[in-house]
Length: 416
Image 1 (cartoon, rainbow, N blue to C red):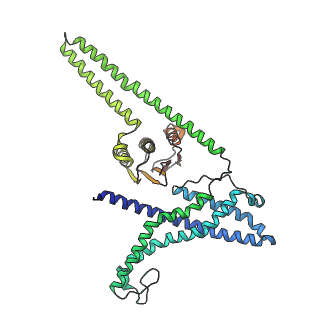
Image 2 (tube, rainbow, N blue to C red):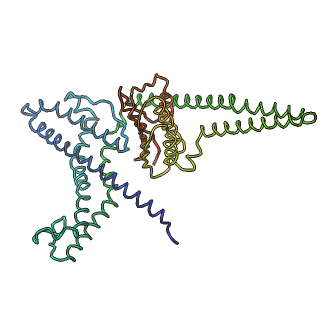
Image 3 (cartoon, rainbow, N blue to C red):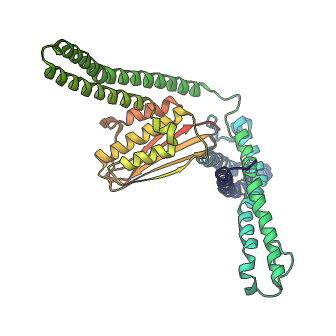
C-alpha cells in the first residue's frame, strides 16, 4: 500500500508549521519568564525585608508588576490562539491582596513560569540555533581553528571531513527534537497560565453570562435578518419572474392557434424570464452558503474574492484543516463585505486578506491603504459584519484613523 505524495507533503508542511508556531510561542514565553524572574526576585526581597518595614514599601509596586505581567501573559497567549478568561481585577492593597485567591494563583504561576517556563523558553530559542549550526557545520568547518569544538555542545574537534559530517547527525537530532517535542514543550510552558491565570471557580461569572446572553440575542437577530433578506430576494426577484413566466405561457397558449409568430415571441420572453429567475435563485443560494466554499475551501474562495475585487488584493492563508461550515461562511462574507467597502469607499491602491487558524481560533485580517475613517454608523455594512461575528461568539476590531490605513480584524472560534 503506497502513501500518496500529496498526503506526505501535507503532513510535512503541518509538522513544520506546528514546530515554527511552537518555537515562536516558546521564545515569546522566554521574554515574560525573564521578566518574571525579576518580579520573583523583588517579591523575595520584599518578603525578607518585610519585618524591617522596607518590604512593606516594596510590596505595592511588586503587586502591580505581578498583575501587569499576568495580564501581558494572557494577551501573549491570546495572540497565539490560547484564550484565557481573565478573573475579576485583583486588589492592590497588601492586606486584601494576601487573602485574594487571584493574587495567590498569579504568584503560583509566577514561580512556575519563571523557572520551568524560562528553561523551556531557553530550549525553544537554542534548539533551532543548534540545529542550524550543527547541520551546516560541513559547509564551514575548515574555517574554524583546529582546537575548536565540532558540535554545538562542545564535544569533539574537526580535523577531517568524516569528523565534520558526524556533526550533521547531531544537527539532525536537534531538528527531530524540535519537530517532535516542540509543540508539547509549548503546551507545557503555557499550562500554568491556562490553569492559574484563568478565572477561578469563585469568580463572579455574571458578566460572562450577560455577554453570552447578548451573543445569543445577536445570533437570533442575525438569523432573522438573514431570513428577511432571503424572503425579499425571493419575493422581489425570482417570484416575480416566475409569475411573469406563468402569464407569458398562458398568453402564448391562447395565441398558438391564431398567431403562431406572436406565440413564439411570448415563449421566447417566457424563456428569458425563466433564465433570469434561475439566475436569481442561484444568487440567493450562493448568499446562503457559497458553493465555492465546498468546492475550493476557504483559501480558494478568498482568492476568488480577491480576483474580483476592484482594488489589487493579496491573499495569504494558513488554515491547515477545514473549519465548520458556519465559520468558513462567516469569514467569507466578512471578507466579501470588507472588500466591497474597500472598492467603493476607501480610495485604496491595494488591499490584503490574511487568514490563519491556530489553537482552535480562526483569525481574519483585512487591510487597505485607503483614506480611513470607516464608521459603523455610516451605513458601510460594518454593523452587519459585527452581528455575523457575534453570532458565532467571535470578536471584531476595527482600526481606521483618518488618512488610513484601515485594519479589520475578526477572531472566530473554529474548534480543534
